[in-house]
Structures are given as C-alpha cells and as structure tokens.
Amino acid sequence: MKQNNFRVIRKSSTDLVFHQDKSPPSAIDFEEAILGSIMLESLADHVKTVLLKLRPEYFYKESHQLLLNAIKTLYEHDFPIDILTVTEQCRKNGTLELVGGAYGITMLTSRISSTVNIEFWFRIIYQKFLQREINRIGIQKADIALNDSADVFDLLEDFIAELERLDPLLSETVATTADRLADEMIIEFDSIQVNKSQKLSLPMIVYNLGWPRFDEVISLGKDKIILIAGAASAGKSRFIRTIIYRLLERYPDISVCWISLEDSRQDLLRSYLASKVFISAKHLKSMKYDHSMIDVMKRFTREFQQFDIEFIDQAIRSDDIVTHFVQFCDQRKERFNILVVDNILSLDDQGDFKFDPNGFSNHVMHNLLKCRQKTKGLIIPLHHFNDAQQDKENLQTGYRPILKDMKGSETFRRTPNQVLLINSFNIYKDLMSEFNGAEHDILSHMFIVDTGKNRENKINDSSALIHFFTEMAYDQFWEIPLPDSIQANEKQFINKLKTKTR
Image 1 (spheres, rainbow, N blue to C red):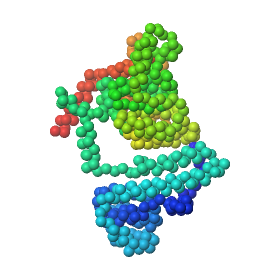
Image 2: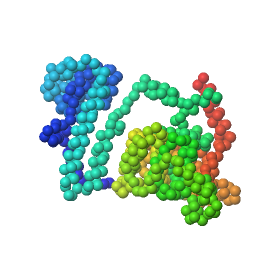
Image 3: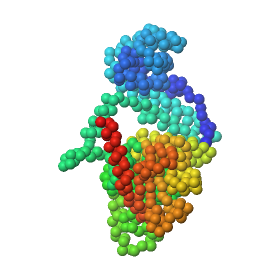
Image 4: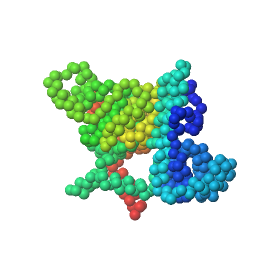
C-alpha cells in the first residue's frame, strides 16, 4: 500500500496563524446561543437534531468544546440535560473552572428567548469551522510544498482527500423521523402520473426495459448501486450496452456518464449500429459491408446523436470518477443520471494497491458509495470472477456462479443494492462438449442473469434466474419467459401467504 511521507500533527484551529489584520473565523455569540438552547430545551426535536450533528471541534472557543463534551456525556447515558446536570458533569470532568464555573454556565441561558432558530445558528458555526479547517489544511500543505523532497502528487491527493472529508453531505449523520419520512412519501405520491382511462398509477421513478421478468425482479432507479459480475468474455459489456440503449430509447430524461475502460467510444457507437442494422461491429470497423447500407447507418447514427451520453475511455481513478460524476449530475439536476464503470479492475487506483487487493476493493467501493450519496444516481459497475469460478468441479452445476466467485473483498458483495451474476455457457468448452445438435446450438446462445439476493451457496433456485437468448455479434438479447411450472409454483406460494395472513 502506498505510504504517506508527509503526515503532520494537526494543530488546533485556535493556534493557526492568520494575517495580522485578521483573526480566525468564529461566531462566539452563536456558539453560546446553541449551548444555552440545548440546556433549556434538550428534549425538543429541533434542538436534539442539532445536538446529534454537533462535534466539539465545530466550536472555536475551547470552553465551549469542554461544555459540549459534558453535554454529550449526559446524552449518551440518557441523563437529563440542564444547567444543574451540565454543571455537575463539568465538575466530574475537572473542567468546571475552565468553562467559567457554575455562573458562566448559567449565563449561557440568560439571553435565550427562543430556540426556534438553532438550526440556522448551527449552519453559521459550521461555516466558520469549515473556514478555519480550510485555512489549517492550506497552511500545512503550503509548508510541505516548499520541501523539495515531498512527492507533489501524493501531496495533492492528500490535500484533496482532507478537503473532501469536510463535505457536509458526507460528514453529517442524516436522521429523519417517521413524520418527515411520511411527508416525503406524500410528495412522491403527488408526483405520480395517473392514467385516467385505466385508473392505474404510473410512477415516474420506475424505469422498465420491456423485459417482463427483468422489470419484475430488478429495480432500475435512482440512488442505487447495481453491480454486474461475470467471467471474461461472458458478455457483461454487451449486456450493459443493451440495457443503457434500451433505457435511452424509452425515456427522454436519462443521462449517462459512461466510463468504458475496455471498449473505445467508437466501439460503443458501432455496437449500437450493429444492433440496428445486424452487421457485426467487427465488420463495421473493417468497413467490409454493403455500401447501400450507408444511408441507413447514418440515420441510426443521428438517432444516437440525440442521446445524452458522456464517454470516458481513458485511464481514470475512482476518486476522479466521483468528482466528474458529481459535476455531471450538477449540470443535470432534474434528470435520471446513470454512471457505468466498465470495468472496476481497469481503474488506475489498482497501482496503489499492488500488495493489498482487499484495500483496492474497499477503496473503490467506498468511492462509488460516495458517488451514490452525493448524486443520488444509479451506479452500475462491471466486475470479474476469480479463477476459482473455472474450477472443473463447477462443471456439475453448469458453472453457476455465486457471490464468493467475485474477485476482491467482501465489500464488492455487500455494498451494492443488488448484484447480478452473469452466466454464459459458450465460454466453457468442457461444458459445451457435453451437448450436440440443437441442444448445443441453444446452449451457445443462452445467457443467464442470476439475481439471487446475496446467494452464497450453489442451490437450485430457478426462480432467481432470468434467461435470455442472445446473438452476441449484434448485441441482441431476447428474454425467455419462465416455464409455466415455475410461474404456477410462484402463484401457489403467494396464495398460501394470502391465506395465512387473513
């Protein structure tokens, strides 16, 4: 793992050297108002919300930091919070004199007539804290930058990482109440369009592909991470291309940021044309095709031109993806934004973790999770199986993958909202040799998506599978309906549940 050679001891924000005509940014009056409000109305919801967000370092004045420590101790032990209990806790902590004694604590509540504006006061002291921290980090890095022995790229990376940790979207613990959650749901209901002729609600948040089983089992929506994993050459990239193009054709509000580290942007356009004119992308690239098709291909190229897609097909790090996708979404606030990363193992971060593959897994998924939290977009990373997936023993189960077959740490398995395991039989020669004739032909075009939630074992759970018949050369996927027997079993199971709950 890369070692940091320029770590410095963090100074208190009150020890920083500012310009002679300026003092460190602070809002002492608001700090006092917040502490006084907590001691007066600690049980009020709006006061408790601020108390949960507060950290001692947000306060500029050291005595206020000590007071908040006493208040936090009381809160963590479910003790009442008021002037007397805070005074007693400070006495136990040995900090009573440092906070101004009992009189100083009492005076903090004397000017509070209402606590209604406490969240506004909190935002002010938080802004002052950010100003002090940015100044502190800048001074430290400026000193290091003057040292010729410092690695400037490591310095820049560390500088950006420290600034990102100040991001309130990530540093705050966001809590909500049942009341607020219900209000949000009512707003969501109000945004639903109604088909008056059929009296059916059509939620705008549902994005379907027109594949019945896929649409039933897999939820393509905002604020999700859906990881697609498969063996090399199994068709993951072709599958995600088909999904994205179907979405773009069906919905006008979709924007895609496409990190393509295996195929060039030109290859992605050719794959779209191949799916329309049934000339393989390979032949399109070689220019060996009937030129009478040129006008047709131009027409589909113009259709492609209407899609809102940004392509990146060069080396990139996962933290740079976060920065880029945040900017991408900021420019498209009212749209359904999708990030595709094809594939994880090609990210530039991997060079930093040559001897720590688990560290790489954790680092990448942390950044993708950060990306989801900041943008509320749909994140679709593509990933690979490890060598154990091709073990000969798996021939008996048709090389059906499980979660543990994915490369990397547990993070890849646990962070996504859903993991889709891809199984394409034609890449396994020993399996294909077991069949001949029509069976062989069918199997060579079979593509299976396993949606079993967190499936750890090789079990026969056919209802978790989505079967496709494919023509890979043209990026074509046709969903195969479930056998009637499975559908009947599902209906029977649902009816049993209804009977038991009556």
